[in-house]
Image: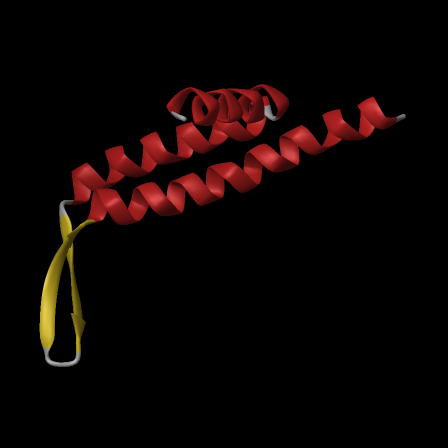
Length: 82
């Protein structure tokens, strides 16, 4: 089961190399920036919880990197179709 999942992830990474690369770069950049900032507080309904900024910024960086990577991969796919 684990091998099949790993093979599917590897196939997706090979099919969309820029998307994978920029997603990982975005996550790494978000984690580094989050570690520099520290933590943030999330307050709602009379309570507050501390959340590491590295987690939040890693998610944001991953999404931004993914979108940028998709834009880099798109011209390659268009050329392959022609």
